[in-house]
Image (cartoon, rainbow, N blue to C red):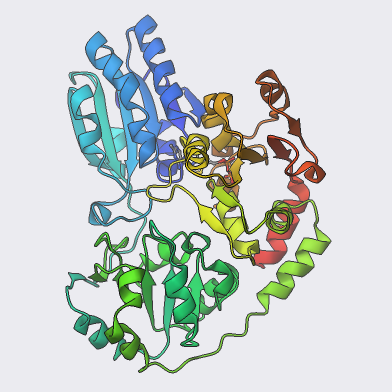
Length: 467
Ligand SMILES: Cc1ncc(C[n+]2csc(CCOP(=O)(O)OP(=O)(O)O)c2C)c(N)n1
């Protein structure tokens, strides 16, 4: 940037990752809690009277900066919030972690700039009125020609289906269980991938995301039909590059992609629609042999201390009677990968923020007599530490402490944003008078169970799994 910032608090995320290079010449401090980081920035700007930056990923991360920006606004302090955002064409579509950033800071900024990532290095802060919010549109997609169309009638689906022979059906999640719909769909013998939050994971005919991606990349499918809200699977991000036509059934009337045909119907409405089931009769079932589950079993035996193996063990230990709350990022992915039981699973997948997850599980537990198991990563747990003071009787917390935001390792991003650490939760939990163990044998006996997967085994597992 033209005017050097006193310091930049860089809050880790995939969306703003590419902006790191702009700050090569700056004093960068890595953070993962935007609320705290922006208050640190505030304190620093107070004492130095010079602009201090906070750079965040998209979604709730931006909202977490609002309290410090408000304080800066009324104290007239030079805070500069730089948010990484999805490209314009994805705004308002419900695409993963995409929300309206501009309106979030309206009451706490004096300058708002919306720029392309290539323009960030040219920004000159002198002369701007503080606090400043710079929203940077980071584009990682290849432009494509497919369109977005909204429909009201099932006839549009009939016309869509008529063009294809091997569509892939993806069932993601809704605010109610999609299981009754998925049970009915399974009888058609058509292949489908049901995510864990659909509550029909165990019924999925395509057993692993690995198989799904293999088939997808081999050109096995000729179209995609999605029922539910924006999916979690990696396919969704691959689809944005436009390789296949997509039909969306989403009661929010959101495509979650920049293209496709949308019909605002929920799985419950589809279940009751004779037309929908009649249309499906025009498709011939195509069997998918899924040998990846054998490989998964083999690797779980070979690497018992790997994170995926811990996930499998938790799957075995948790009763189908209980409720599960899953945090981002690897936690939910690995749980889905190893799930074979009929679980009731919740997660905050509206905009995928890692903030407030333990608090969300606390609220969930307050509304049920059932036992709730909240499984979170270490960074996600640290983000919501103060919630630990108030854990209801029927809630236990399982922390998968893999010593950093390992999702960024998986995505092969800059190592610095993993924020590797050597912390554990033992003293914190004991200080809060919560029973604690690191031994899986104590599952259901302690309030907080911390699991430390072996890094070496986790990496070896993934290497062989992804080969
Ligand atoms: C509020 C917010 N800030 C930042 C992010 C970006 N983000 C996604 S996952 C992640 C790290 C999560 O780490 P951890 O909880 O340890 O889980 P792991 O990646 O190891 O599975 C971050 C910082 C986000 N989703 N939400």
